Length: 174
Image (tube, rainbow, N blue to C red; front, side):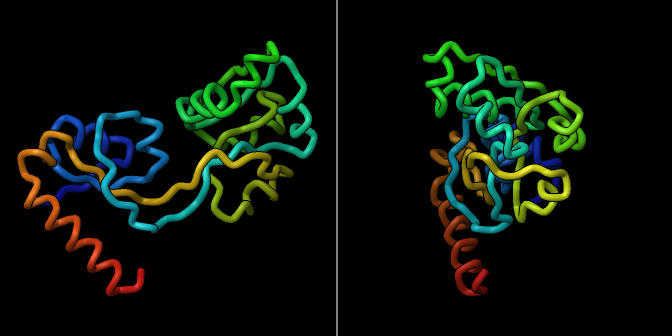
């Protein structure tokens, strides 16, 4: 049995066992932070999560004491600046994350934030708004996730489905 849901709900359905398996973007997996097994990268919907802003923000990323970051993905942004950018803290710098649900590209233009953390595929929208990729956070694509209990209890059935999906994708050259 299959059902469709909003991408942000897929990790919840899978974690709580309403679904044994789900397919969802890596961005949603990272943002939701659910306890799941990520079992297969479908290599579809490839894009990147990036720190973006005007060229002038590049120096701000390296030298200023406070930087404001706007994002639809506040957890990913917070984790990136906390983990990958430990030097911010060691230099007495502070990062403020501002959650935005709409056109995040406007934040640097109107002065709400110096940079944004957002999904970038081609970069066309960035260029249209005078922004560019300043740093890459991580690659993104569609992933297959599995409920941890289901993987243990239904391992044979779930592994067969995973292998069937892999085989189909490989034979189709997707």
